[in-house]
Length: 322
Image (cartoon, rainbow, N blue to C red):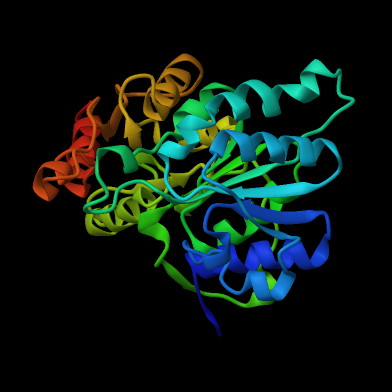
């Protein structure tokens, strides 16, 4: 059975959609060199009319993608570094994402914004290490963040086929994750549909991105003492609230394991909604980055800002004590 990496899953999904639909094309900086390797081999395979090298003008080519989508194409815009999404925040949230509403449904904008390197890598520095998924979810942009190769394949396919803008966060720490897969089993995955990686009865851990794998490891370590349910929303917005409510009906306890900043982040939203609407028998907890920036010059200091398995273990212990 083939062993598929997360990175190769992105390459395969994008290539499959470009094969299946001639309106799909990819654009971005360093496309000719496939710098992130997501588009490795694409220039030879699809040619320069569908693999577009863009100048260093993120706002310009993001608006170009909006126009192309309104004209009937399905562009995939690749960004190499998370902060570039902040440069085009207005173009995505205030332009592309609102045209359907502003036109009374007459115009759709099927653009996929692909970020295959979100999060921290040692030495990347303060301006390259953010996880801004909560910002886009807050503004109502469809936002996905799969943790496994299978989910990355399925959700990228769905994102490209969606008639609205979708932003796809691929955590840098997940790019080397591999799974044994039968290619025939790789299928589109609906937006807004969570996945249970592990069933449990004592506590629900909501984890996103690379933290899903840490949560599974902690659940394995605690097996025999605590029954941990690992809940992966896969889609940040729209969030699968019904599935979370069902999970909390079983466990009654909640910990959120979030790689974003703490203030007004995903963890805050999940805790607030659960407290307002769902079954809880103990005060919920969240683990996130503090409200501070990764420095980039001190690996030890940076590591101290990231959510850890030890923090998750402690939070699980705390909610069990009520």
